Image 1 (cartoon, one colour):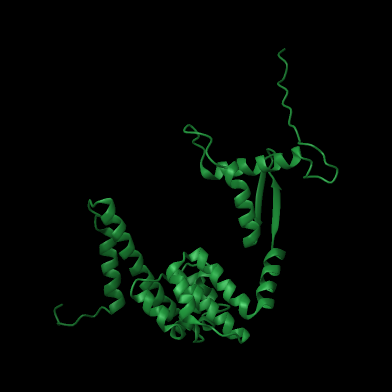
Image 2: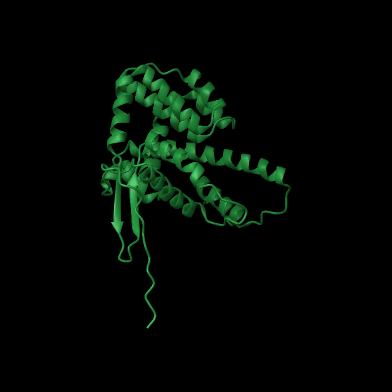
Length: 263
C-alpha cells in the first residue's frame, strides 16, 4: 500500500483469501489426492468452528445481544449468523467449555478429533457439572478418537447415565412425550405428513422401513424420498393385512377406481 500500512485486519485478510480460494479452479487430481484434500479441508473447518465457538461464547457473556433487541445470545447468533437454534446453542456451549477440555482441544488442533466430537464432550462436561457428577475427559476422549460421532453420542449418554440416571431417564421420557404426527388432507385427496419422533422411535421406524424402501432392481429409478414414502405405505399395508392396525381388526383399505362408461 502507498503508506506502507496494511489497513485490513486479520479477519478481513483471511476472508479475502477464502474468496480467492473458493473462486479458484479445483484442478485435476487423483481420487486418492482428493480424499486427502477433503481430510485437510475438514480439519481447517474444524479449527474455524472452534474459533467461532470461542468468540460466540465471548459475545454471549456480554449484554450486546439483548441491547440489540434479541431474546438471548443464542437467538442473536441464530439470526445474525444464519444458523439453527441447535447449532447456535452448541457453538456457544462448546466455546464456554473449551477451556475445561485442554486435551480434547489439543486433539482437535492436531487433526485427530473433529468439532462434532468436541461439542459432544463439551455438552457432557456441562451436564455432569450441573448435576454434580465427575467428568473424566481422558476416558471419553479415548472413545471419541475411536468411535464415529453417532457412536460417541451414545458413549456420552452412557457416561451421563452412570452419573445421574434419573436425569437421563427424564430426558428420554420428555423426548417420547414430544412425539407427534399430523395429517393434512389436500384438496385432491393426497395427504401431507408432518411430525417428530424421539431418537429411539425414529431409529425403530428407520429399521422397519429399510427393507421396504430398497431399490427393487437396476431399473428402479425412484428417488429416496419416494422409496421411503412407498415403504411407509407398505408397512401400513402389512399391519392391516395382519389385523394389527385397528381396534376391530379391519383388513386393508381398498380403493376401487371405476372408469366412466362411454356414451
